[in-house]
Amino acid sequence: MLKPQKSLRKRELKEDQLVTTVIKTQRYMQEYGKQILIGVAGVVAVIALISMVVLSKQRSNTIAYTTLTQAEVLYLGGQLDAARQIVENMVKTYSGTDAAGIGYHTLGNLALDTHQYDVAIENYQIYLDDYDDDPVLSASSQAGIAACFEQQKKFTEAADLYQAAVTANPTIFLAPQYLLNASRCFETAKDIESARTACQQVLDQYPDSFYSQLAEMTLARL
Image 1 (cartoon, rainbow, N blue to C red):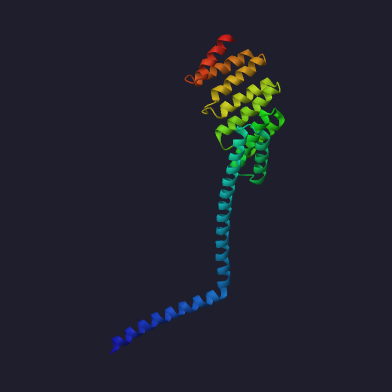
Image 2: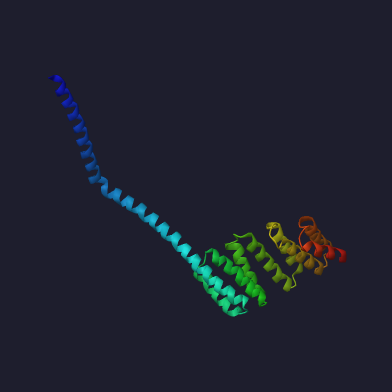
């Protein structure tokens, strides 16, 4: 008759331990439950806020791209003033988005097309300083500034910047054209040796490009 009592005691001990654990848990929750709930709520709030920010940025970028597309259509249609106004409003409203970066590059192009060279330089530089996340746009922005310098008759500065665009982004499609632009500017600045070097660079680095023929013709003339 002793075995059942032993088994009973074991069961009672287990039940006592369970009760003790439950009681401790209850007391802990009574004492710290509010803090725990606040902490959990805080974490949930942070996660929710991050999700909202991400979604908000995605929505903003989508809207900004849509607006930019509308401006590009006007730009291609020759309605430069209307395109400029739309892009200027877009970059202010959606500053920091990828579309805003493209917008500043577009504003640079618009200003260059209308001979507002200082304005063009300013917008290209904003892209390079604050965005600069696409090799094609980066090289194009540098080349845009170089084109402004060329129009301002700063030929050596223009040539150097055309070359810098290629040095930083040698694989872009327009790299050999930028080198020929550099050669033209060096020639205008009476730096014939540098002009020849830029042409030779086209032949050495881009021998299969369309521009290699132009480089050969230029070298033969210089």
